[in-house]
View 1 (spheres, rainbow, N blue to C red):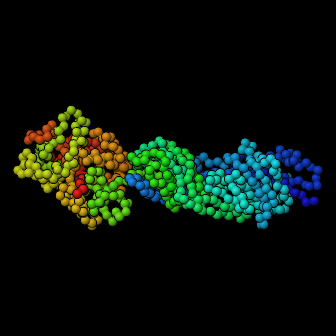
View 2: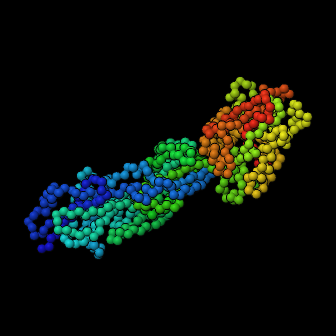
View 3: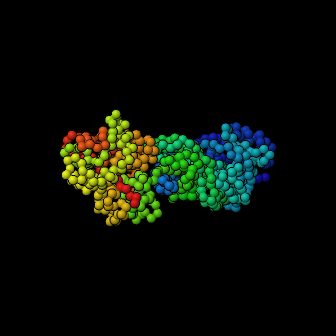
Length: 585
């Protein structure tokens, strides 16, 4: 009588990515006790094959994502945007293991090669401690095959994969646990043990998020990875005979809420950013496109805005998630600044309809904006050119008692004058022969003059052939600001409250640069002074007043108020000048 072969499955935890079966031969006309001798054969030869599963991240394609392929800028509603990129999950890649990790229940099926006819099946689990396959009680313990036959073997985790005929189906909720593998065209040999090896593969990918921001991120951040309705694959089907897959569409993903923990500082372009990494993953099926997913915030606040009130942030486009892939979506959350354009209107750079106009100033509030460039292409100018620098030239000096410099600076900060009047109102100061409007005195008050006439410089140098609207040009529009508007510059750029500015306010270097560079402007020069129009003295006005003049000092990490005085020639006492504009009619 023809010999038969009984296949029994044995496993060890190890380093090879294989599932193995020990095949034991029994002659049907022998008086050999099959079960007893099977045990002896295992004792003599030992379990020589291993079963292991493909771990997430163990994929060559994923390893090639050392540098993100695509970075998209995504609108996040009023006042915020995000730069989104996909990067390799490096931390998880270092922890890869090929050993069996998951306590799944498996079905192993043998098919006749070429016909797809099922020859038998066996169900059970692999013991994670010993590696031995333990068939379910009350089910077949072996698959009986004939020597010389050629068979295909399929193993799948039946807890998470359903079967109908020869089609396996992996649904979206099971993307993280489903495993299946196949060994093809195996010739059954007439020997007591035979290895039949196959690799268990995954059909899902995992995704987590890294949040990056120039300002500190709150510790209570929470978010979910979601999709629009019917936007992602809801299942993957797998033909057990041909081993071909197909996606079933119209699925919807709402993953569990992710918490976030601190992560190493992210560095880019010479700037350092605060970073938090989600502690959990969302799982999708292979074939899902990155742009089909988005991040929906559930908790936390940033830039004075509740993130849960913001629209979901779409992931960047152009990436198809592959089976077994492990991905990090890096999301750099950034503020959006408002700008004043050459047509006199205010908006974000990407506000619809703004593309044909030129941004000219950063809006800081109260109908005020600071120019994107210094006057005179960034040169230093004198406040005035008369010999006596300390002579009062404004109709009113800010009264400071000299108790302490910090207290005096606070008085200047809270003084309501913007600088418009000190630029445009005629005043006859001591020693002058006529009442002078500083805005019109190029030779005597160059800092004021070039601020007041910055509209001319804008058209000549920066407006790209476009003109200026009436509310951003002409009389009383451009001026040399006092101290008060500079505090608005601080609050607009830093996104901190006015109360955080005493005589100094701290800001972020990246935001300082971004606010101007995004619109094609030049950031404020650091570690040097800018003139204000403010004079200070112990009296508001006196022919013999000795005044000092306030300056502003931008630094990479802060903005501070200063005061300058000189007994020398005022024409040689120079600082930088940045004009402001009052644009409300």
